[in-house]
Image (cartoon, rainbow, N blue to C red; front, top):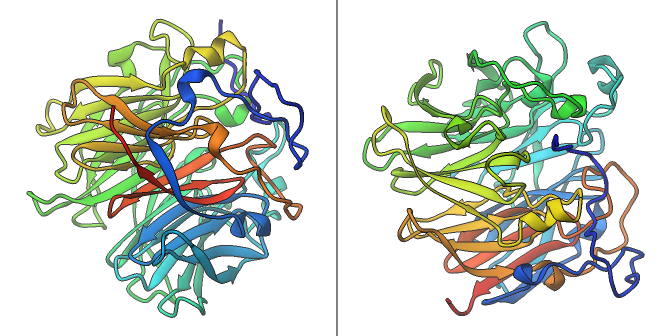
Length: 439
């Protein structure tokens, strides 16, 4: 049976307890997903009430930077100096753009917003049909005064034919910004010089790998298999002193680039899902451990097939030798097969996660937050999770575009800092969590 990826409201098929005050159906997760060994430290739902959906979280020192999918705010700045009481201190208005990603430079002085259409195009829609919805490209924001963010500049992205193209994911390192275009652009990675942040200048484009993807069959156009960059994560390698970019190239798998010279990206390693069988595709996100020895790679979904995996799946790779990338282990959320058994359109995809040498802190969309021990990377296991039943009901919201329908939670980003776990649910807000006991 072909796995069918549908953009429908993400609701659990197992529904009891009627309707919540918000009008949303109560969600009861399988027993394996119930909260274990995690406690809530602090919560901010105010930001969730100001926008149809939240997206992307950056935690840096005493501040959290959170994207607002749609205006009037494009960026929220939250003071987390007291993690028990995360407090909204500023909003950056962006009424004419939809935001899909936010990143902040190391100095905490510039935030970069990736602007794209939040909803995928309908089957018959073209670029031209979509261009009036949102600014496409990047918005640079001066955040040196946390309570008074200001516009620095905007940059418009285009494909190789000059047609408008969005930025799906963005990264920033020193004076350079990296924009991925996903399925809307044949220029997978565009690199910009922002040494003058009021006037970004394009300096390079990473070439698209020549890999033939499998047939899409009955998948919607926006989810058709293909070769385009979904995300890239940057890390200055602590031993080699070189800047590497870990790129999720959808059906072209993981590609690692040496970006030490941003004007001349060089591919140095790659790995594809073929090692696990043809059922897995759609490389979604990759992040290395701080040492750079291991890389965690996740797909958007694993189609039904020989692998037996749906969403909620990851691979751990040994990248100590770029010439011979080795698969060490795989892990999936307990009960992942429940999604297939219930014929649910629920996604447990592992989204923007954080990695230390010993743990992975996972954002799992509707499956909540999971903490995975990788002290032995050949034998990963879960030590804690914050299950769907523990999330706050979404507050009343302004009207606007949404990607994830009415289902919740939809945990988009998790970051660890100083022993605390910060989790952003697109529907209900910012959570500060703590692991309280290990199994």
